[in-house]
Every structure is written in C-alpha cells, then in structure tokens.
Image (cartoon, rainbow, N blue to C red; front, side, top):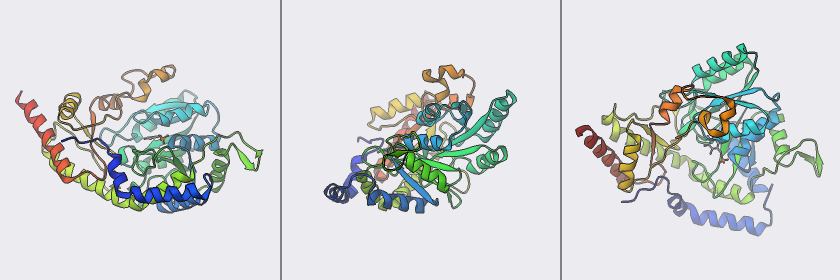
Length: 379
Ligand SMILES: *Cc1c(COP(=O)(O)O)cnc(C)c1O
C-alpha cells in the first residue's frame, strides 16, 4: 500500500466539478480581479473568524508583510517570533526594515513559549533595545498560548500579530485564532487546511483603518485611481482563487471534523507506545484543526526510513530552526541558544494527515509504527 503524506487529488475528486463550474463562471465573466467573488469570500471568512474586516491578498507571506508594512513600526526595532516556524514569518520582518528576534517554544505544544517571550523582552530592553511587536504562530493547527501572549503584549505596549497560516479555524474556547492580535494572516497555499489551487492569502482585522490601509497597500498604495499615498505592492488575490475558495469553504468544517477523527484514531492507536513516542498535546479548551499530525521520537530518522520503505510518506517540520539558518548568521544566534527548538527539530515527524484518508490507511500506519518500536525494543 502507498500512503501519501497529503493527497490533493483525492480532495479534488470530491468537489472538482463544482470548482470547474465556479472557475468557468469567472472566466466567462471577464472580471478577474477585485470582483464579486473576492468580496464575497472576504465577507464570508471575516464572518466565520469573528473579525470586522478581511482583505484578500496574493499569499500568506504577503498577508504578513502587508500587516507589518501598514503598522509602520519604527525602523530597526525588534519583532519577537518563534524560531520553530516557516521562514515567511521572519522574512517579512526583514523586508520591513525590522529585526527578527527568535524565541524558544513550549516543549509540549511546539508553540511560542510565553516564558521565552518574557525573557527575551527583558533581555533586549535591559540592553536599551526597542521591541515593537510579537508574531505569534499557531503551528500544526494548534492555537498558541494566545491568552497569555496577548496579556503580556498589552502590559508592555507591544503589537501582537498572528500568523494563522497553519491554523485557520482553530480556537481557544469559542474564540478563534486570528482574533487575538491586532491583525492576523492566513495562507491558502495548496496544502493548508483551507486552500486553493495556487497561491493566495488573507488578512483579518477588526481595525477599520488598518484594513483600509492594507487594501491600499496591496494595490500599489493607490488610494484613488492612479493616485498614490503610499508605496505598496501588487498583492491582490485573483477572482479565480476566490471562487475556488468559496466552493472549498462549504466543505471546510466537515474536513476539520475528519481531520479530528483521524487525529483521535492516531492518538488511540499509538498511546501504548509512550514514552518511546510522544503524541501531540492539546491543552484543555483548545481546539486543533490538525493541519499536521506531529509525533516526537528520538528514533525519528530511523522511523521515517522504516515507514518510507513500506510506502508511508511522512514529513519533517522543521529540520532546521530559523535562528540557525545561514541567512540569519548576522543576527548572531548560536547553537544552544534555543534548546527546546533545537532538540525538537531533531525529533518531530509528521504522519499522513488529510481529510480523505481512510480508516484502513490510518490502521496501516499505526500498525507499522508499532512494528518499528517492537523491533527497536527487541534489538
Ligand atoms: C504557509 C505558511 C506561511 C506562508 O504562506 P504562503 O501562502 O505560502 O506565502 C507563513 N507562515 C506559516 C507558519 C506557514 O505555514
């Protein structure tokens, strides 16, 4: 049996015809940008998330970039963010003339550790450095400790921005991620939980002025036809992507339910293997959308190879933490600076996870993981 890590073709089979109809409608309408599909998508998703405004943009990266750009934070001040995330989170900090400062994560949730945030804040301010913002990432579908992080940001006058590219729809109690900070960014990249057939993203905020400014900035800074108050970018979403997303959004809640079902099945099937293998931890009142199902084991590389030989594809997010990336050498982080991140990046393994997996496939994966540990334990 071959089990893909993520199979987009299977999803397409479910609603492909509907998508093709929706795309055909856009193609025939002659309106390809800034049309009714985008407006409808923005309203639908803002309403779903619980913010007043949403602005469709060309990618999750651009969504993050535009939030920072619109905020006009003082140049060369510090933006705190976890090292254990995708590079887009830090890239946009540099592109805005700000300095990324990497934080460690919580050992159990893999999300930004509030303790590391506090320590970094005091360390930098004691050195006379100015910290202006925090980017909290809710990784793998699980909300970061946003209540605590928000509290700290408010106390210190820091701006909280949320990267919810992997966790659109996740929530703490009834409050969705993406509504804790001043603004949040999501991505509709093909492998994200709510995705399109290409690149697109969205900014969410309840700040009217911020939303309007981002609207201008994603359109070259144009505030009326061919009149520019800002220097912006070409960062629009297309009508085709908006139309596709409107179709896929109808299936989204059900797909999250399916992801939760598979996560539960993995949890139950693998729980006997603890402590050799650590299962994902979900704090009480947290609701994960399981964009990835990530286990942790010291035998990560061996297990990955073992599964691969049996047709089971897995992923590693992330092998190289951002603070040790060659591109950030100048920021002077060293091995040992963020011990939890460094340890965890050696041990995490993401198992096949997408809505249209089958019961049989999950059982197959579970049984081979069990076989692996039996063999290892008998060595
Ligand atoms: C995917 C992702 C992004 C970037 O989104 P794109 O649409 O690919 O630009 C940013 N941050 C995180 C955490 C992501 O997973």
